[in-house]
Image (cartoon, rainbow, N blue to C red):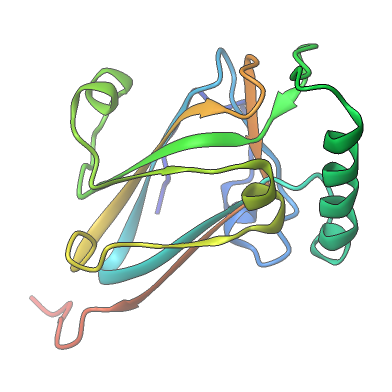
Length: 173
C-alpha cells in the first residue's frame, strides 16, 4: 500500500519510518508542516502513538537526551533559528480521513492534538490515545503543524503506532 506524504522531501523510503531502528529521516520540503495518511489493512483500535526525532540510533538516545538537556541549561532562552531541521512540536490526529489536504487539516477539528517537547521527540515517548475516539480506525491522518524551533524544515525518524485489530472483522467478501 502507499502512504501519501504531503510536503515531504522526495526519495524517502517510507517503510523506514515504521522500522524499529528508525533509520530513515523524513523532512518537510517547503515549510514546517507535513501531512500524511496511514491506511490499515483491517480496522484497528489504536492505543498510543510515538514520534522519534532523535538524530542518533536508539542505543544513543539516552546519551543524546542528556546532551540536549545540558545544552538547554547552558544556553539562554533563545531558540536556534539558523535554518536547521527541527523536531515536531504540535501534531493533530484525524480518524478515517483518506483524502485530507492542508486546508482541511487546518479547518477540521482533529480527534486529538498532541503538543510535544524536545524530550518527548528525542525519547520517542508514547502518547496514549483516547480509546473512544480511536476505535475501529481504517486510516490515521497525521498533520504536523509546527516544530520546536519555528524553522522552515521539520524532521522525524520514526513513528510508532500501537493498537490491536478489531476482533471479528473479516476480509472475506
